[in-house]
Length: 95
Image (tube, rainbow, N blue to C red):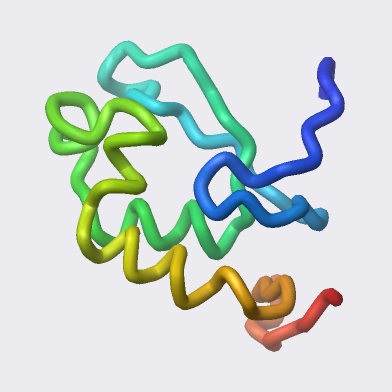
């Protein structure tokens, strides 16, 4: 990683490895700009929005944060410990 990123661009909490790189506009739709997100935050985005919606409507972090379900998710996760799922499917809590 070329730069030291310590904050999730979506929820604003400290990043804990492992984390993902999210293309603001999907790579398949010509996007190049990326941000770092917790895996759980990244999964939430892709569980709600299609690649077309990400390109046409939700093509910035501010627009993503304004989405009603993502806004609700951010509020919910703001006081939770850092969660992620390992490859065996077990829930692991990082504090």
